[in-house]
Length: 154
Length: 154
Image 1 (cartoon, each protein chain N blue to C red):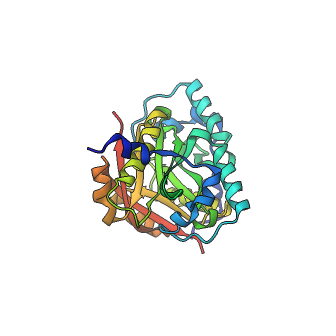
Image 2 (tube, rainbow over the protein chains, first blue to last red):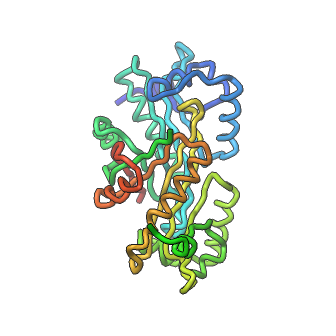
């Protein structure tokens, strides 16, 4: 059991426009290809997502000591006709700073995102992951459902 | 090689609000749980998606002879910070009327959706499918990438 001090220290909040200066893009670079993003590009994309409101939320954890973003993940809400006009949460781009381990930051991010999807009335939340990360998501309460297929454009 | 008559006959177009009366919901019921949807619910959801414009498109094929919707699939565009503020197309809810086979309607739907994602500047398009449907998507140009995990809310 963690104490409330740790809970407070590593609380998840929504991405803010000032987080670019706190290493948000550098954190994403640990996950996948992401060249440097200009301030203008960042602000434009931030506003693109901001207009979606609760339908696209990015959670972050800021390390209070260093002022750096050390974990993040996003969820967007898909509106369907299926399931009686149901909604599905899609979790994407979950990453925890590789230098910080054993603080359950990934679990905190996932909990924040799944709770958001639940509060939005989704009937399920889904994500794609590598076979290596399957066990982590199982611990978070997910089950394997199917396979993910991708087509990359040149 | 199919002739241009077939191409014209089975062309994919965007969902229209009048498609509820053409069996669109009944077609979705072949895919997953979907009770009857009232006209009001349908129109509300149609408008929810309509405001997203090109960021959420539902393609349908209407059988000209019967006036029924016989195939559908959707794609929505996720805006990321990753990949230099890249975009990803997510394909969902692809279904072809079980009574109509051998017309390559599924392939037409997938082509329509992937071309839309490409035209929107996505760097990739992804979807989740059962192991049984993997071969179909491979024929469409997709490759298996990872596994899909899901959490259902009670």
